Image (tube, rainbow, N blue to C red):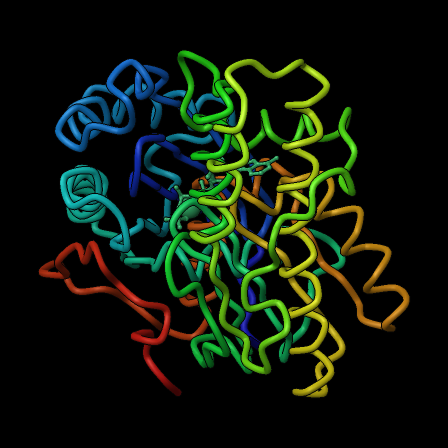
Length: 348
Ligand SMILES: Nc1ncnc2c1ncn2[C@@H]1O[C@H](COP(=O)(O)OP(=O)(O)OP(=O)(O)O)[C@@H](O)[C@H]1O
Ligand SMILES: [Mg+2]
């Protein structure tokens, strides 16, 4: 990463799931980061892939225009395009990827297909100070929960990952069966548990810490989810305080396991920096407790701003920019890959 193009203008596009996001960057500086959320998901009991891709199609041009206007940048000033090509919903990925290819072709500029999970991990590079390699990365999102040893850009070792549900998925489901999920915003379910947990007692109910004492770095959350479900069925009606206590106790179980495994990974691999990323990194208890515990363990902790933890195009732009510095360009026949894995990145 010796080369540096501080004035290079990158346009980045992220359409892996249900949010259409576009960002414009100058070098590593974010000039705009527009996120257009599809708020109807819960009307249908979750995201409907066909509807998500249609909404991306409708949103794409207005969101690009909005991002350019907010950044004060003209289309002709763009020198690089970054776009998510996996993992995600195939129909959603196709809209963003094809738009990016068409734009790059018409402007005669390079584009780079970006792995969404790698981008979550590198979101910490949007901040100052940013981490240096090597670092341990805890990625906790709606679809992933993994611990990664990041040795260099593009050289990653997955130390462990969830064997069933992702932590974010578990937060969303708990919000649903405690009936606290908002009616018109699927992405707000996890945050609702966070909000209610602040008013509850994390010690009230002893929920299990699955794989908490195992000597590997894997996670498991479906048993915990079932425990909360079974507990919630014990009564017909719960008071607001009892629901707050359930949220706090459930959240504490998740946070406990995430923190103890992450810090152990730092110790065992003798790495002094820990990076937290993905949507669940916005969780206030996880941020606070990890801050405290990392300090005690002498580990330097890097957590991106909340807007860079959940899905956003700025992290895609930053990843594309870092790869551009290393001479990477994607071919026009790059296909979207709904099940792209982190380890499938090129190895240097
Ligand atoms: N404050 C919070 N507390 C707990 N969970 C949260 C919080 N904020 C967001 N989340 C959860 O983060 C998840 C969304 O994160 P993200 O957008 O990174 O996931 P995704 O893009 O759907 O999945 P992936 O990145 O794995 O493909 C949701 O499950 C959401 O409930
Ligand atoms: Mg994501």
